Length: 306
Image (cartoon, rainbow, N blue to C red; front, top):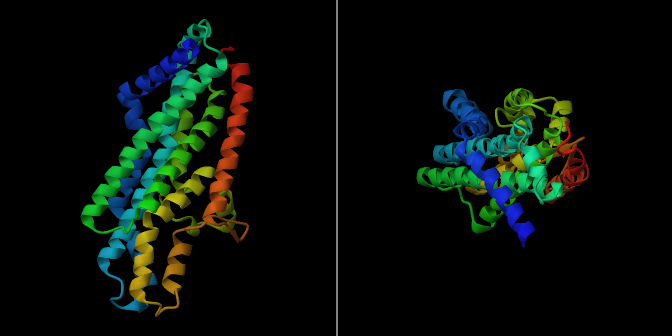
């Protein structure tokens, strides 16, 4: 029981450090805010034009309101997906801060095991990132429900929550492996700048992956965060997309639905093979388990070393 209290105490402490640091909270949402700004400036018109081109031969079968809702859903997908990258990273920066300030040496002097210390960092990051991302997701869905119907049922909402949790665990495990190589906050912050700049392109938040060549698409689809984006995109906007297809009534033989799926990358596609959503889930879980195994083996051995 005493060991459990020590672990819970460290986890609570790590979460409080993150939530009381206003700078970390702001920077963790920097990339999502950039996506929102780009959307307001020109992304919405670009995405709308793609949908309008695909539906140009269908007349008024698809309403402008439904098109706008689909685009808004794609925007929210990009915001949530990028948040699942930047928030866990910023929450894990406390590892480097503690090492730089020699707080880790104080922790090592306690009866708490090294594995429990590392686990406290991991659990704090997952919990903080999950809560913050879910808050953004629920606010986004609330706003979309005011502007129109997204046709999201309870099963899709449950899958969304599960995907956000998996994305949080996956990103945290991957970034935690990277944290072992950072000795100071300068290097950590510099790498964060690279992650923020690149992640929006890798997951297709700035523009659909279909706009890149096949080699780049294959490389991006190997990254778990891209798979998480695919899952969120399906569960968040799949309902409105199916509703639009129902409005067409099969007059186009499903051509519009297929073009939307291809243009906005609703499936993980590697080497020309299209993965099912279940296979995407399995792949992300496997990568997450592997990285967790690396953490379990490597971190207790190197933690506290100079």
